[in-house]
Length: 454
Image (tube, rainbow, N blue to C red; front, side):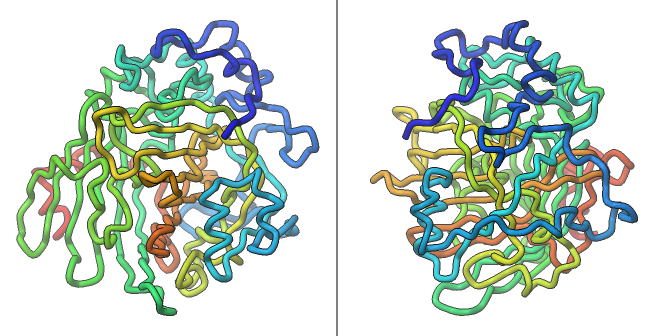
C-alpha cells in the first residue's frame, strides 16, 4: 500500500546514517509550519482536519483532578457513522483490520465526530523537543536510542521507522502515574462480558523527568512498570514488574501469590503470551508496542488520514457503569468517539533469521501525540490476524494527552480483549510521581512481594 508523503522532511530517501539527527534548517520549522512536536500545523484541504492552534489545554470550569473527567465536546453532532453497509465508501481512511472488524462483528460501527486537535504539552516540553531535533541519535545498529533528553519527543522530524517508534515508546504522560481498572475477555459464543480482571498499574521513568539530562542520566532505563491483579480471587496478588531498557531485553520479575515467591522471567517478552489473556495478547502488544526493536526492520511509509479513536472522554469516564462500557464483543459504540486525524504509518517486517508470532505489523501513529492509535498484525499468509485500537484524551492537570481503554481483536478466533476499563474505579492519578505518591523504589524486585500483599 502506498501512502502520501505530506511534507518535505520525509520525501528524502532515508539513505543516510540511521542515527543522523535532523538538520538545523528542518529543526527551525518546529513551532512554525510544523507544530512544536513535529506535526503539520495546517489543516487539510477540505478543512475536515483543522489547523493546530495549541491544543485545548484548559480544563472545563469546576473540574478538579481526581474526579470524573467531563467531555468538553459533548455537544458535538455526529458527522457520519460507518457500518457494514457503507464501510467500503470510507476504506481509504481506515486500516485493513478496522475494515475487517466493521464487516465481521455484528452490530459494530464507528461513529465519527468533528476533529479537535486538542492535544498539547507544556512549554518546557516543546523547548526540550526542539533541542532533541538536532541532537538525538540512534545507535550504530539503527534501532537503540543512543542520545536524547527526556520529557520531550526524541525525534520530532523522524528520518526512519525506528525513530518514529521511539517517539511512541517515550511518549510523555507526566513524570509517572498510577491507575486502577479491569480487563475483560468476553467468552466466545455467549452474551457475557466475562469475569473482570481487576488490576492496579504504576508507571514511571527517569526519561519522563523534566530534569533528565539524557540516556546516560536514565541509567539505561527506558521506563518502569508494575502491575498487580486484584481479582478474581484465583490470581489476586499476582504481579509483574518490568524494567524496560534502551538497548537490551527487558528485565522482568513475576510474583505468584499462591507460591509466595518472586522469580525472574527473562523469556516473558516479545511474543510470549501475556498472562491471564487466554493467549489473545503477546507481551509486546502492551501499550501497542513495547520492548526492543531488534526483531524487525522498520520502514517509515508516509502519512495517512484516518478515522481513529480520539478525545475518548466518554468511554474513559470513571463515572460510567461497567455494563455501559463493556459489551460482549466490543467497547460501547455509543461511547467510543472517532475523528479524522493524520497518522504516520510505520511498517515492521520480521528480519531474516528472527522469530516472532507476527511476521509483519503496521503501526498508525498520531502526528499530534506520537502515540500508536491503531495497529494491524499479520500472519504468515499475509492476512490480518489482530487489530488494536486506543484513543487519547487530555489530562489537563499534567498537561498531556494520555490513554486508558483499549481493544485488541483477534480476527482468527473472533474474540476481543477489552482492557484498561476504568468504569467503576478511581480516576487515574496522572500526578502520582509529581506529587510524591509514586517513587522509583516502588519498582525494585526486592520489595515486590511486600508491595503486592500489603
